[in-house]
Amino acid sequence: MAKLGIDIGNFAVKTSEGVIFESKVTTVGEYGTNADRLTLDGKVFFLGEGEEEINAKKFEKENFLPLLLGAICKSTDEDSVDLALGLPIKQYTQFKQTVIDKLQDKEYDVKFGDTKRKIYINSVKVFPEGVTGYLYFGKNIQDKIGNRDVVIVDIGGKTTDIALIKDNRATKPHSMDIGTINIYDVISKSIEKDSRFEGEVTVDRDKVQDYIDKGFYFKGEKQDINVNINASKELFKKIYNELKLNYPISTEAVVVMGGGAKLLGSAFKQNIPGIIVMDDIQTHVFANANGYRKMMK
Image (tube, rainbow, N blue to C red; front, side, top):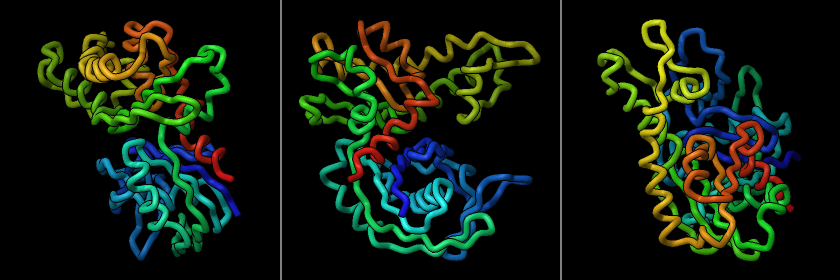
């Protein structure tokens, strides 16, 4: 029986087996698509394509089950699985049992690609997002933290979860409706409205990170879009003001993680001396999924 930690975010799905794909499904495959196909209840879903479905309660999304079953199929050949999942800190107490009841002891007849499978979810454990990811990597940054408490800032796809960790327990949980999707949208709109581009540019959200990493070209010439990227600092200010007003960021350790850590990392470093930014995409992006798996007994 396989044991899997799965982090189903609004932007991407990550598993403890190193699997990652965008949190999108569509029943209409793109021409020439090589997307993984999952058939459930006679309906074919193409994983990683289509439009994002945004819902603060991710377990209520219509695409939640196809994403989850797709993640299982991509991560293991075992048909019986024990799962560890996550919920935002503010939802954890209220909805933990709801998620367990929704999935535990359930069986699903699916076809992944051309292979028929009977997925049985034997057990489900649910852990708080962000906190669990921090605990997974905590030992690696202990020398920077010392004996201080830790303010965790987990910037996900659509929310930022904040908590104060005291003796490995989360206190003062707070969620804000700001995430990587919002950041990408601000940057894309800034580029589209930029007078340099003469109103001729339409920027897809999915391309923003590529433009940040590899450059943005207009009429064959590479453009400086730092001013457009910096438009997202207004979102940073909202997070920073919450931290400054309600958390001991001057005396305790502050750790920023999640998909938005790389996007807003420089702004955090400029404003909070000594802050720890976990922005290694290849490693830290799996923090929650790996943390969930580690916490399974």
